Length: 271
Image (cartoon, rainbow, N blue to C red; front, top):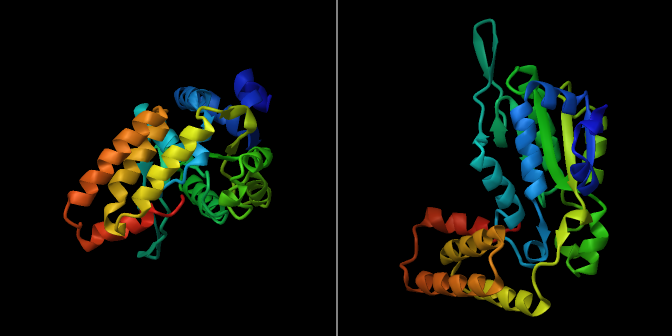
């Protein structure tokens, strides 16, 4: 059964693997969450503008998934976990889950370093053992995208040290998720859409360069404007116009306090 539980268009667009009957558990016990995951995956497009323009701490791709799941009630979730031994409490911390709803945990790993997979799987394992999570889901890059990114001249932006399906599968097969049912979806070239001309891409990248010329403490707000517009699929002219306005506002604004400056530094790192 397994993958046959998924609609044909999803099977055609994504590289999919499951362990411990994750799809049967997901569809049988969490039908609403199953349908919501399918709905978001069906809406997703890997746009040229998403991968051809430098991202901030949260890329347009991650932002699309975060916002789409949030729109149907999924939330970022932290868990306060501890182990009690002979009345002594031992803190057993877990990491934040990107998207969580009704015992289904979902992580988006577009361009993090591949050790993030270890974190995700360990989270799934621990939370499953504590009966806080019933199914773990990961969305990442299929290795079939390598040729697409090379053809666009941007493969070096990602390299092989980031989150790819080939880095995830051995970790799961080696037992990284413990007893937790896990299903993974790999984004493939079948999701790719050429949504921007090379000329418009160059113009938007010039605006991004202008943002990087701002003092670090002032970059975060205009960078967020660009990222959000990209995630929304806005036309290049609107991205350029709104980003230029945000740059001008940032130039005239007083420098934010140190804490905001630290956040701006993080915003400049590709996530």
